[in-house]
Length: 588
Image 1 (spheres, rainbow, N blue to C red):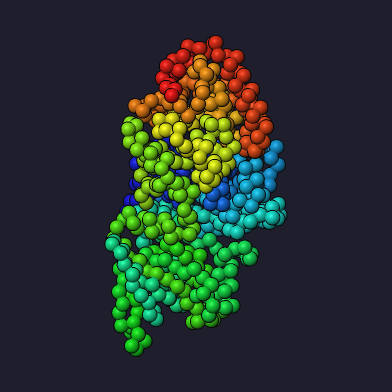
Image 2: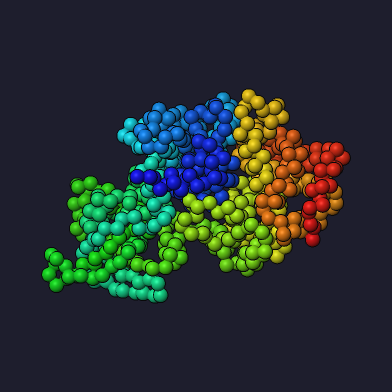
């Protein structure tokens, strides 16, 4: 039987460009539902042979999650198990990233290590995932190696980061079975289709167009028995599954489990309860409780309450002694409208928190921008609106991603640190949002800044794809710069500061710059690429500012000023190129 995830991956020509790392990126996209995998790849993939057994280092400050990953892609998928030695390599990866001598690290990992350690130290990271992604069968040998890597990581965090807020460190094998499961979850939020009888004591119905629900309480014993049979498949609509237990008061699962053990009769009032998606439900006479009714449900997908379910489900027999007095508030929802179903998952899943951009989706500026983008060729802009559940696996070729738009605007308008380190604040903070998304922000200007960001990412990838042995000294310096995290946003900011030299006239308002309404993002990237290539030789002058991920504002200012001076000094030599570019730019 063919694997549906691999079949979907095979259609992703955009990921084919990343070679053996393509499957790793696909798994990341399936897990987190990213719509901007290009920027993630540009920032998170390591390059070169000396990668200390680490192919990807992904830091998500918004989710509080760190993913350290190793990938393997065999030419013949599913013919055997993946080599366990590559899973063991993650021991080396976590040791170097979390505790190795930074000065002894190669350039392609030094910046990543500083970024990771800073995020753990400032208590941003709550979960550390160690992934081994491959296209073979999963095995016990690999799982054992990953568990050892997780123990290594836990020991390092405990020893070197005593104030860290890391509550979960998990080694995860993502082979054929897990890939298929991740794929299935993006296609249908209800993975378990069995029929169950739930012993309930009362409840009430409520309904509206396209959905109906039954609100009641369910016994903890029933929840535990269902978990033992289906485990995390119950959590198909929930992005992060069950996170496990870390014995710390700050860890919610430890608290849930403690209450279930020590005070089960109070569990109902202490806990927020569950939201459960079902294919159907009805009340039927109970088989073993005379005069009572059971709720018969077909299909189950717990959209909110993953940690509650997992904590109760994993109670040992001695811990579950008082479970007969434990009840959990629950609402069972049947919905026949896919769009509303997607919104139910979005708004009710506390682990899949509402993204910052969601709160701006009905803002008048975003409404106007969406209307303006309708006139721009080969471009789709959602302006904070979420896509469908299949977006993570079906490439949206013309999508102008919200996250990349926010980054490009912040960087182009002089705030590269915000663009790289705190994109969420662009959407969260009213003042910051108004600076970048205002009456002067147009769809055509977004295409202008977004395409510059994409052009810089393309320039980095072109150099990264070269074998190190054939790179020129200039390309080696450029690659050294691009290996620093935040370098892409910093380069965008430096080019923006040099716009008057490039255009040959005073720029009164940068928001007025564009390629016009008839220029697609694809064509805009092509317009920018010669400019990016002309500016690349001076990128090493920005390296000091990229150190420590753009945190030193004065270093950033001075480095951009030096870069700008070099662009001015070479302006005469590049005048024909700049003049050609300037003829494409509209200023209003």
